[in-house]
Amino acid sequence: MGAAARPVRELCLAAAAASVVANTPHLLYHLAHAEAMPIVDSVAENALLAVTVVVGLTVFFAAYRLPAGNAAAGQARDGQARADLPRERP
Image (cartoon, rainbow, N blue to C red):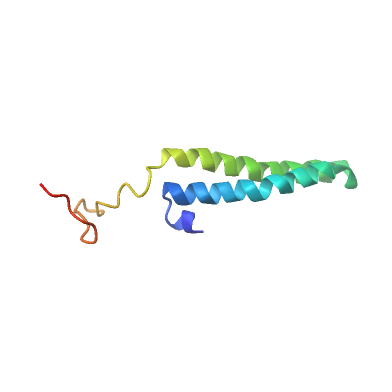
């Protein structure tokens, strides 16, 4: 939730990694027990579970395109330096 509200690289990487870590064993379990369901249900279920892993990996690798930390932290939206950050000395 925090990564969606404030999409900085570290939060996105953490959220995506958590998603992949949680969904991969879930997918593997269902793949190992696919014979317990009718074929149509098994294929649909495993395809949707695979999508969750692929989306997590996609977000994880896309997060590398985001700037490290909050690169815009030193600038306000209007281009002025923020008062809560130390200023550079000339």
